[in-house]
Amino acid sequence: MDAFLDFLPFVLSALHFPSPSFGSDGGNPSAVGKWPWVAAIYDVRKNLLVCGGALIREEWVLTAAHCLAIGARPRDQKDFLVYLGKYYRNDSLDDGFVQKREVSTIVLHRGYNLFNFDSDIALLRLAEPVQFTERVQLICLPTKQFLHLSEANLGSGTRGTVASWGENISDELSSELMEIEIPVLSNAVCHRDTTHLTGSPDSTRTLSWNSFCAGNNINTSSQDFQAACAGDSGSPMVFYTDALRQWQIEGIVSHTFTKEPCSLRRPGEYTIFTRVNRFVDWIQTNTEYTQCMCLRSRDKDLKHIMPRK
Image 1: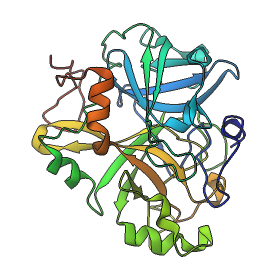
Image 2 (image 1 turned 90 degrees about the vertical axis):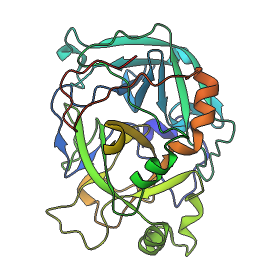
Image 3 (image 1 turned 30 degrees about the vertical axis):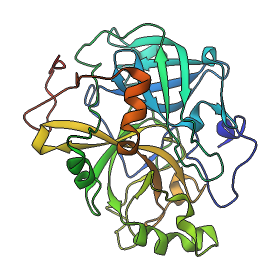
Image 4 (image 1 turned 135 degrees about the horizontal axis):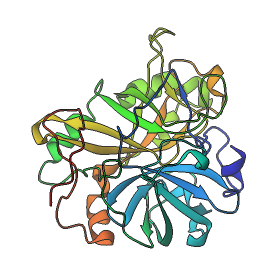
């Protein structure tokens, strides 16, 4: 949490950002190259991996606005480096698949609200486009044409995957990329289960039109419990869309209702995600995104498939 508080002087006491350095209570180490669009965003001044992101074009990464902001304004782009194709947190273990890029531009959504976290979405433009490899690929975005499929992905009970780095159930930083799979929840369930965490019956005040809630509900057993904790801010939540034969980003980790460490997280403590399909026009306008070039596969198993152009 300290890394984020350095960025932002005002935080609602009942709400918390997952501090920049992902954690997954009950998560598992990912296979190398399994999630080839995941980006690691480093704070150069702190020499610290502070947030995750998703590669959506050769030179564009999608992440959370609060990762890149001081208050409501973007930080200096020189403060950040972005790594693609990365698996190990420790740079000394990087191999020839890892691509490191400086940042040329930071674009925060003009509707970003640091008090209720509405429109918590941002774009990083890389100083140099990436080269596509087995470990560096694009994630597909929702489209207006198939908005109904995106909405189906976000139906209550549908499970999505979040992959990033950070603290594990032992409250220690993970040495490799971790993944969890958690279900989307209705606003009603999220409201019911988080009132005691916020101290307010209006806990859904942060569940705007532009966000959704996900996590294991209070009836989940401890053996099956998984949670994002102590940091996967900016990391993508992705779903496999069978009708389109593609993995698709639907959410960006925004904030939680608790600042407990991973070891103390319990079912019913949820994460709020920015709802990407509300921002398709904004993304297209800022990135000149006109044609899908993302990775497609006949099934969920990604086997060294290059993006379709």
